[in-house]
Image 1 (tube, rainbow, N blue to C red):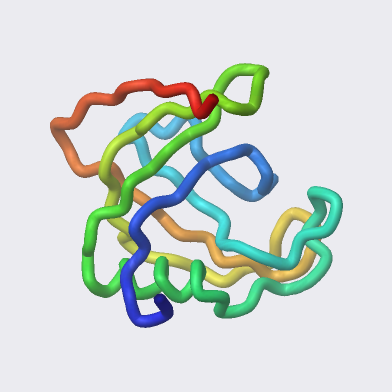
Image 2: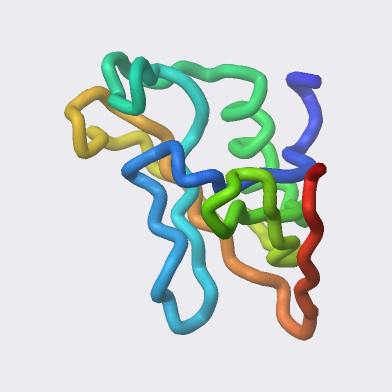
Length: 118
């Protein structure tokens, strides 16, 4: 729903603007939804229900579950844990059109596990 915080996000590798590897503290910069065609950002993202729910999460502090696709099959996902959206920007993407970039920080002291979608 448009008036609810985000429940979960899935890092699938679809957006070139995601920054989800390498941060020492586990921070993820998650790209919002929309404006893509053929894996390229062709138009500015808008306030879709998904983007609005993440914006709302940045003000409420509600936890967000993060899943990440891994492996070559495309059906394997790993639960990364609970994160909080600590802010967001609306900036030009690598392709030019503007995208929402949400900064997600892990809530400490959690473990991860894997599951197969099949």
